[in-house]
Picture 1 (cartoon, rainbow, N blue to C red):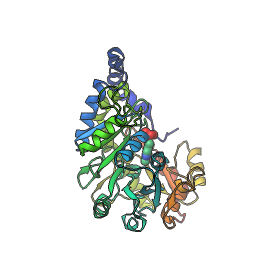
Picture 2: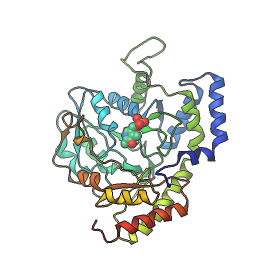
Picture 3: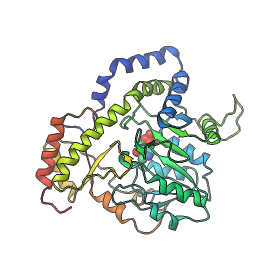
Picture 4: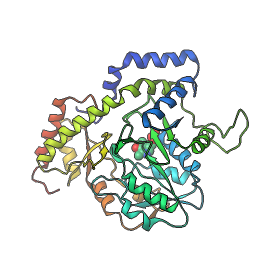
Length: 369
Ligand SMILES: *Cc1c(COP(=O)(O)O)cnc(C)c1O
């Protein structure tokens, strides 16, 4: 079976370093925050080209705290997309604000800047673009509109560790950025983890307090905060993995280029890397009609696939009535209906990749897109 991702292959490749890092934390007894987490924060901020990173216990927590620090709360609105993992929208609702959902660009699946202005109201506080599948949103256009209207830009960079936009890394492209280190992400912990990245010291200070019970010094609770601290073991594991991230992302890009060549030549609807963007392929998603039949065929050929994401957030039972949708979302609907994620991870072999292409072309060639 060719899996969609293979976490065991990555672990085997760095096993002794990971094991030692975990044991070091066990011996240190710094089980939550601590020196390893602090060191990771400095290393990750530098990697992103930003001043501050604040380590938390998930990407969802990172989104929640970034939104709170940005002044998002009851009576305010945040403009984002429906073509995302549900956490993006859920985090807005955690604050009491209203998620306002707009459509995505048909080439990249990321927030369409041309639709922002029509969604802005006097209550709008922030724009929350999602760097879908490892490709950044069109940040220049988004930041320009945000500046003109006095809005903050919060990056959902959960899928985009190491992605870049005109040479600047995700995490340095808006006012504040949110990362997930869920194990399957390009940089993944051995458990749940996330981080907020920003170069704004005031936002960083607020987030740092909020993740640890709103304390400004021990037992001085100046904000109503949370227990969103990162575990020591996760910080240590992430420090081991961060130096490998660029190499892993390069391997992902090479696999993607090979998929592009084979599948694109056969006329498949392959992912598009927009000019000036460095896509890191958290997900390699083609678009196919008759997706269920294609998945079934691949499964019989021993190939796992995924769908990111089959039902957009505005059509999820728990969220349909909680969000405001601006206009129809035809591109989002088409993505949701047709998107199909192929096996992609750094350790994938050329042979495996070839088997995926053959099986996919067997069933897709001749099908209308
Ligand atoms: C993974 C992900 C999240 C949530 O991160 P967790 O660490 O699982 O809480 C948020 N947004 C997007 C786009 C994601 O892919």
